[in-house]
Structures are given as C-alpha cells and as structure tokens.
Image (cartoon, rainbow, N blue to C red; front, side, top):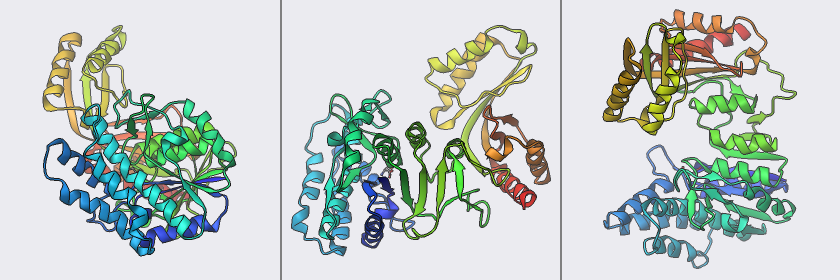
Amino acid sequence: MKVVKFGGSSLADGPHVERAIAIIKEDPERRIIVTSAPGKRSADDVKVTDLLIAYATAVLHRDDYAEIREKIIRRYFEIAAFFDLPQKALQFIPQTITSLAETAFPNADYLMAAFKATGERLNAFLLAALLNHQGITAQFIDPKEAGIIVSDQLGPNNATVLPQTYSHLARFWESREVLVIPGFYGYTPNGEVATFSRGGSDITGAIIARGVAAECYENFTDVDAIYAANPTVVSHPRPIKEMTYREMRELAYAGFSVFHDEALIPAIAGKIPVIVKNTNAPQRPGTRIIPATNFKPQTTITGVACARNFSALYLHKYLLNKEVGVTLKILKILSAHGISYEHMPSGIDDLTIITRTSQLTPALRQQIALDIQAAVQPDHLEWIDDYAIIMVVGEGMHDRIGTTNGVTTALAQANVAIHMINQGASRISIMVGVRASDADRGTAAIYNYFEKEDA
Ligand code: ASP
C-alpha cells in the first residue's frame, strides 16, 4: 500500500481537490491519504492555518472573531460546493469551528494547537465525504483513533512523535478501503491536541508510512520536482530525479522547503522511499528520496541550498587549543540561556558558534557576550549577524577529489568572501559561511560551476 499526502495548495480549492481525487482513484494502492489544511489559492491568499491562528488570537484577546470564523467556514463550503455536496452533510464543519471558541484548554498554547489542528482535521473530514460522494468508499480517521501519540515536552505547538504510535498504526496495513487521516497533529498521553512544527503534515505522512510499512510515501505538492537550486536564485535549475535521505536532510535543513526536514526521520527508520510529485502534473516523475544503498550519483553535487537567519559568535584567543574546558564553559553559558547551536567550526585560536537568529534578542546577545567575556576572557569577541550558510550537498562528492576547490573557485570568481568553510562529517556536504548579501550570488556561482563541470 502507498501512503499519499496532499499539501495545502493541492487541497486549496475545488479544482485542486478534484485533481487529488483523480490521483487517489488512479491507483488502488493509494489507500491512506493524509491531508493538509486548505492552503493558498493565489500568491496573496491566506492559508486556513493562518486564519485559524488569527481566530485563536482573537479568542485569546477577547476580540470580535465572527468575520474570521465565517471566512474559515467559507473555505470548506466553497470546496464542497464545487462538487455539489449538500451543505447539510457538512454541519460538522461550522459546528466544530464555532465550538472551538467555547472550549476550555489548559492554557493559551494548547488552545493555539487545537485551533491550528482543526484546519487539517476538517479537510480530512471533507475529503472523506467527497470521496464517498464520488463513489470511493473512504473513512475519516482522527489521529486519536489512529493512535498518533505525541510528546509536548517542547510545547504543544512543537510536538514529537512517541514510539508507541508505530505499533498502533500497524493495523491499518490491512485496510481495504481508503482512509483519510489529518496531518499535522497528534494527541499527548493526556489526550490534548499537539501539533508538529509548521508544515508538519509531511511528518504525519512519514509516521504513518513507517507505521504501516508502506511501499512508498508519495508527497503531492505544487512543484514538478525538488530542484538542485532555488529557482528564484538560479534560472531553470536541474530537477533532481533521485537523491538519498541524507542529501535531502542536509538540503531541507538549509532551506529546501518542499519537504519538511523532520519528516525524513520516520522514512529513514522504516526505509520508506519518499516520492515528491506535482498534483497538477502527476504524470511527471518527480523526485525519489531513497536510502544510500545502491544509489549511484550521476552528478558531483546534488544540490546547493542557502540558509539565512543565522548569527555567529566569533571568538579569538591565543592558545585556545591548549586551554582545557573552554568550549564546555561557553556551551554551558548558551545552555543556561536556553540557546541551541547549529555549528561550531574552530581553529587553533578561534571558535565560531553559529546559532539561529530567531532565538536571540539584543539583550540576550549582550548578556551572552558578557558572560563569555567573564568566563573565558577572549582577546576578541563579536556577534556577526549578517550571516548565511551555503550548503553544497552531493553523494557524488564522497569519492571525488577537488570539490572544495570547485566551491572556492566558484566563490572567488563571483567575488564572494568566505567567512567559514566546513566539510560535513558525513563527507557529502560542504558548508560555507558567507555574508547574507552574498548568499544568492554565491549559491548561483557554485551551482553553475558544477553544472558546467559535470556537463
Ligand atoms: N497546515 C499546516 C501549516 O500550514 C501544516 C501543513 O500544511 O503541513 O503549517
């Protein structure tokens, strides 16, 4: 059996849902369908998840929410109307949305999670009704019934799956009818709704695919494939036909947003091939994400990604290499302030600690610098904010000599200064820290260099 997930834009309106239903009909192995909430119908549209966040915020602030609530209900009714589904069959939708505002939650975070989850829940309910209306026997299954149990240790809006989920899901392997399960959320052991991070329906799909040991996990979205570089940075980048899990993970981490980076973990554990396809052109091959065994790289680099929003704490101290415990002291300070770090390239007298800018406030930044100054007494300490990371990824780099040379040559030709360069321990990635304003130029230069070389 195949697990199929449709993204928000694939379920945004009647014509898209019609395409999704045709895709389900086309292959009887497509028996578990995971939904997102209706996404954007045009560039300036608003996702239902964002409408629900606005609704939750209005309820929390005791503002008037009638208009926003009606807007949300209308999104579902418009889809139903496209299929001439009588509104009477859909009373569950306005009832559920209205009752949210009257329900008591443990706190504002749980309220927010429950509101957000309603977007996918109602879309799954609607899709099941539409499939039945079209003559395909389908059943709506809520994550509670499916047994998707999550931890809310990092908060109810940042859930992580608990292992018992997989044994709960195994029974659905036998299902003969189509099951429609909402993505994005599960239930805590206490029975509260908790959502994954944004874009988390991908995660649900991967969890279910692993739980039922699916033959593959098809992820339907609005692009033909995952491209080797961001199409807004490089014109007509090469579509990636096949890539490994770890390549996808490194690229997703650095900004390839087509597939959620956390969604790879269950797929890897279950060795489930992931296939990213376009709902609007399902005949196109898409991108297959597979284990590294038997993968034969066709190109030196598979993709180049660029992530901004990093801040780097640069520290210089003579004889840093000889001093015992310096890094420990610094990491303890970061930990005491609740800051995680992403990378820590070091030299004999220098250390750079790269963190996500979103974790920092100006006050926190200053306090961390003061604490480190007091504990380590560096010769020089500074925060570099204008920081971006270019990630060059490819299984093909593993056995090839001279890839770093290609990266640095390309950057030199594009006049991009390198702040830091680090070959990933996996030997399939090279990470380059550059000024944020140079990031796009550098990414394009590296991509073009290797495309030319591989041609
Ligand atoms: N609807 C959720 C979001 O917008 C989850 C998803 O679409 O995957 O983040």
